[in-house]
Image (cartoon, rainbow over all chains, first blue to last red; front, side, top):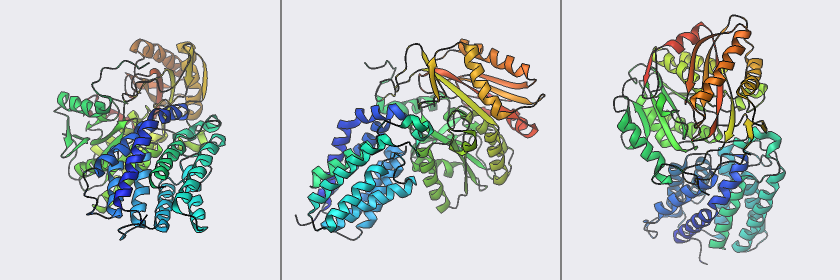
Length: 212
Length: 335
């Protein structure tokens, strides 16, 4: 691969939209247990809006930063909710992280990936262990960075990220929610996976499949 | 199995509802130019007046858009069903109602709403509009008393918005409007009970499971689990449980005055609400608290959820003046 370009990023967003759409009802059901049952709807709306916004673009005429900013804006305006600002901030930070690049090296993509997780953390003011999507995103990006630093190819770094995201999401079952709507449940949130962490695994899984 | 709904397309439900609302209430409401999810009062916003922008997810009608009008909110930003609006329609509301005296954002305390309204407030600041935010946190079931700032905003929005809207309409300063809004929120206490779920137009599946003989005390207006699930009890027992909790926090003295809201979550009929209200009055009578005004009906719903909430608004002279101030909205009038 000669570097990740706008066509690859568009393909990645298409893959995420398809994966989330297929997962929509499961995510709503997870959210119904400890929340308001709309998480799958919001995520599908958002990524379908991104797919539609990117579809007419002349990919040879724009840089990754512009594509990622367009993804942010379309996701945010379609969704609102919690996932809107969180994912929109992730894409805006990703855009800023690769400013001025026409194509991305493995290292640059790993930096983009880390910027996404940091954006989600900053916007949601959440830390690890609070039963949110951060519990999937942060270990995923840390695993990708560590694997990349060990000199492995991007595919392997992303595989490590997915495995870490899956473990992180699974671990939310044993957490008491401290952020978001389910935080009002206290102990009753125990035993249930966080829907935001579950959808993060789906998003990261689609990214891995598309780019890996 | 899918639930039954009178809709055309679940994904179009909110926009088609707004078309119908604007068609029904052309004298009261319009949408902002190029922003159909920003509902603006025809009469209300004016130079020198603090603009009041409320908003949140759809599915709670007449909250929020029904409370837009002279004397109450100047605009409402409308989100998808049970989902905060994104920043853009909120910003368009702020621009449309800004009279140079600042804008007050008021909405229920939910993580998504906070993020989107905060982003909109940052954008408004770039347009030189000063925005203050007051969150409603009236749901006593949603967090312990010492963590009031973590509580949800539910049906008590009605009183808090009403008081703030009156303060704005009386041309008080942004500082004063904010102070009165916070005080109104501190004086508002709500407790709800859910009997059966609602279903979102996009999924048409019940949003939680509950036994045919069960109720859930303290459930949120989006079906968020409450504090306890048990066998369905009588109206008096349910009202008693709610009032025990509310009165313990409100701690009214003999001779105090309250306003009462007995609210349906959607499908619970007026008959049952009035049966509950009967018990509420008996309880208040017994402790020497007088009822200044009562509203019974659909004020903050959760689509077709069955259940009800009781809100007490603990009045003093100032809050009573705000409550009695006239307002003229599409779905609510007072004074």
